[in-house]
Length: 393
Ligand SMILES: Cc1cc2nc3c(=O)[nH]c(=O)nc-3n(C[C@H](O)[C@H](O)[C@H](O)COP(=O)(O)OP(=O)(O)OC[C@H]3O[C@@H](n4cnc5c(N)ncnc54)[C@H](O)[C@@H]3O)c2cc1C
Image (cartoon, protein in one colour):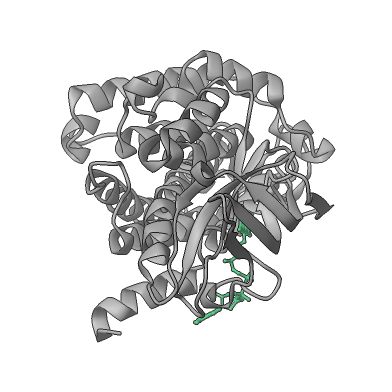
């Protein structure tokens, strides 16, 4: 990268530069086998635990809970570097750094945190997030999963979730559902261990990409969990529970943006290298203006997404949760450039772009990237958030 150094360009502190450099070294030291993991739909537990041993999963967790106390931006910097190298490992790390375990560490009951956070930081457990239902995707007001308080304070969970990433690998699921009320009122979040009586993992799907970390449907039939498993309590007549739940979820959304930055950068790097090296009819492909402009524009789009993502991360509150509007902008921009760059890379690489082969990752990377404009809230949903800012409702 020419021009101002990374530190000045992005206003990174010495500590942030250290995290970035550590992540870059770590990424370079990985020997990921994403092609095989994808083809075999196999979660790379060994490599995941190696990253845990390196302290990767502890990065954002508060120091008093065994973490390294890193910031939201530290997580983005780490994921960006890792994702350029291994989508599978980065997505796995993402769930630990930004997902339910992080939220439990920051705002959960201390008993819940003591039980679950160490297991996630060590790489022994994964906690998934279960929001989506067959009849309620974008429309959270349609969620039908119910949380019923029992006389002793424990909570009964009934519902049917679908498309839960890593749900079949997880030891617990953070379930979003309804304590009462209708529509957007009464929603909250409760942790349900996977071995709870009445929890049934139902099915799995083969996706166009990202099969090393598969999705499942999960049915909850009269699952009872103790009171401390309530992460966000909803109340009938109030939308505060929804706001608190989405605030927690914004850490995950921003993590997706971080992954997408790395995916886009990796695609740009591979395509540019190819265009510089390949000559046709005596001319380097990189000397054709049409091709150059394609990649110049994508590099610009990536830079815009990066600045939006870093900004949202810097604006995170004292608990490390980033603001909704800025996160929506970042996630939208980063996921769109990840899809655009990985798609354009296929064209730039010719036949090498379409083959399914370990040495030619372009088509796999595109298949992996494609879901990110849907996962974590769709592009249209993010645009609705931004439009509400513009139009007032
Ligand atoms: C790779 C991947 C991983 C996922 N992981 C998880 C997970 O771990 N946990 C989980 O709970 N869910 C997960 N999901 C599900 C994801 O959150 C939902 O797919 C998403 O919220 C959209 O819901 P839907 O698929 O039901 O689409 P729908 O809500 O039915 O929407 C279909 C289309 O209509 C558009 N649309 C809907 N409403 C509006 C509107 N009001 N205005 C404009 N356009 C609209 C949408 O943007 C979309 O393009 C994952 C999805 C993917 C692709």
